[in-house]
Length: 371
Image (cartoon, rainbow, N blue to C red):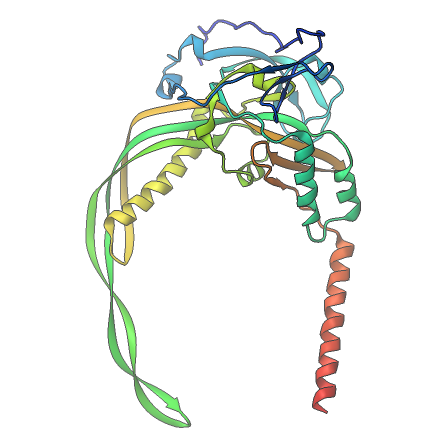
């Protein structure tokens, strides 16, 4: 980013209660601010709307508007590398992503401002219940780990950083179209001990050259901008309804943490390009037609290319258990759960022994019936 970008004001987001002075917190059920001390409520009333896009090429050209940048103090985890916006209450806390000790107030981060967010709809008790239900379905999980994870430990609500990409593409392609036809041929077979010939249908593919052009407009190709949140879990708790995005409002973050992105917008674009290319290949196959397709060459030109920096809500639980870190992610909108799947060697051995015992019993029963 441009070194010309001036430092934005660094501060913590505080929303004091006008009734008692305590800190207001965002309440997922009320979709507004709530004072946990006196019960005072303040509705937010923000509705989904179109979010302005930023030109991706302006990042490499260092022409991104100064208004798109901000500076915040961050706390960096030495275990997983996550960067969490600094809050005075973070002292002596664990990293919400991996449960490692968190080093607080490690510096100032200049980054692109969030432009939109999806608010939490799932409360912490609801996230606890979803995780407990998910753990209950795990086969061969150690019983003491499941009990440890179900204990009334607080979960952490975090706004995870994502990039979305929009792109206008035009692709010239070359390939081959395959049309399947069936031929009848006679083959020699043995039927009831006698050799005879029977007709058999054989598939043949007739190939012909194909070339053409396809166009596609991509909207909100979503890429995780965090290295602290395990990608396989973040992907598994999707999808996200991005049509509900609302313009960024720090009141939605009251009482929650926000992770600063650790994958830059240009670096993450490589993943977005791969997603787009897969979709383009499918478009080309449909355009080629026929029964089978071979794509031999693609030449894609990208016109307008824009991005957004958005925040998506997740509940996190991280447990240190027998020297290992086990992590669980709950979608803060839908309650979908994904996480580590530990296995109990004792349960697996017992299951194998039980299966062998059942197999031997069935074999013994079969023998006795046949004798």
